[in-house]
Length: 291
Image (cartoon, rainbow, N blue to C red; front, side):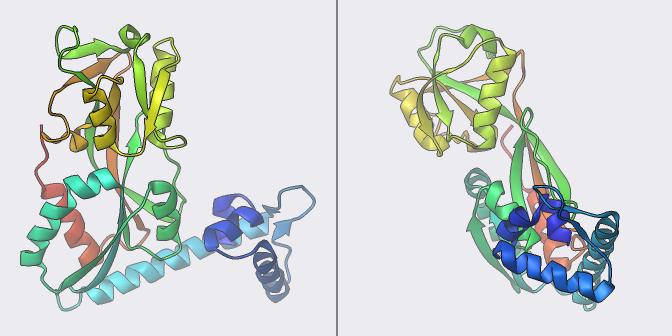
């Protein structure tokens, strides 16, 4: 029931749970027989929860959060930080944060064992909801907000600028650039469908133009290499702007509109105080970032 409420229908719930729609429908029918109440309104093209179904989903949220909190409480009885922590993270954060964070935790929490998966938020957040991950580190761009399931708690970590990267011989004065002044530029855009691609499209639309896209890259290092080659300009978040990646480039701060990315952690409600999760998040917050 909770998956149907969160995902907006039986088919979407089945995809999120890696089940088939008939299997989800059978489970709901069995539950309706058990409580002797109609939980799904099947009169519309997309099945929706009835008021009784909504109330049951609310109870399910509280029960699951309570179970997470109980597990976290028991895990911290002896004060030790141990066990397996499954982390989902986007590539840029993985390169910029994880090596230093894990090195520090190897000293402060040597019994904690990590399992790391490089995943985009579109994959990692549903996996978190299914219990396949314990914590997710992801980003949200200013003009492309991300909706989270109500079973997931969002923990803000930091905000970073997203720079416009141009070749260092481009004739632009100063460290800032009005986005409208780049209306005739050739753009190396992020991969289609990603939140960063949406950010570029919406930012340029606010500046009054549609970007002329001459390339699409899922990897910021490849995009930077194409900029160095004179193929166009691109967006690079600060954490990905390593000296090696940005050699031969100028990083400009966009104005009208400004462009930024919020970095957040996501955990299931009730799990935040688990010793392993709490220790990991503390280490991420303390890790120094380039200014």
